[in-house]
Length: 499
Image (cartoon, rainbow, N blue to C red):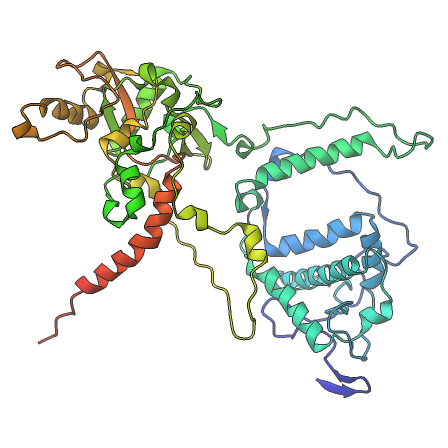
């Protein structure tokens, strides 16, 4: 820092030279074509429709910064004109007296021509500084309501408060900026669809042309239909019909969480039939259309993980609206997630009053006030792979996950679930020998002694699509985690001594 007539001033650039990502080295010549006002602008080329190559392109923080500069200068918008007029400004020693806007340029001279032979690391630092300048100019342009700002205000040395704002922008840029390139569409499940739909909308607006007045001479445009192409990437159609060969399942349904559940959820977890109530048939129910060979393949996949339950409760005939349809949800090129369409059964069950009602919505976080000087906000996120598939459930809950159509008993022979079905049938005898059979299903007629020719498959855990699943999961994460950690600490034994 040095003294001037305006008070304390920083060096030429706000960002220090030893910043890990930013270099303050100035350059001499311009590498952008004539960015001053009044110069001929670059012709605007309308963006093409999205292509398959767009969804396979990789991007890094450095390439994003470089592309940002290019796209802004090619946009031919009022902001691009403002940016072109501002990037050549030199630093003034006068310190800004404003605590915020307009924010002076964080660094000067970064848009001079890049010399040849510059290392990749130095190019990345330069691209970062250029992107930082454009972001600060964008904030100023937003603050001024889209009007140009006096260049003298932008040339000033930033005040301490403005330097804090600039450092905050830098930290936000760096927090999610990996140096290793990564596929752009992999940052979220909805990004591929967002990219495709924005590209299609942009093409439609370009084709429509400017038609603000019928008396203007201009391109009349083509038809106003927005083209939709879902063949560009597999993510654009995430939900597919059942294909058991692509389903990826982790978990064996061996953990009984009953001892950790709240009292109000134990009965609903053990016996979901207690939630059933009389109502008119729901308007939206799963459409059972999967062929029997595919259903059989799904049943055998479940059986390999110990998640298949075979029974003789004829859900498709007696309660057709309660059948469950399993379908695929795209995960990656080699596998899909399993989703259970349980809308029919969910509609016949009453709503559970669980802990999810206390989960805040995103808008609630906006109204959260705290004292930044003495308080802080912490977010803790935990996740367990295929958490729902770890649950061991009762026979009654397994039957509530019955899929259709029924399967031939001969096709199920040799599976672990079929052997378990035979064991259940053999256990039916004298009450003194087999007990009261409290798990026997009362909604279906008593089965015969012989094995019927058609049996039914159901999922022996919690399906992703069960309306009670989120209640059980939230309750367990609140109650089971502290209890398990406490028990582990109590059972830990001291390490034996060397003696």
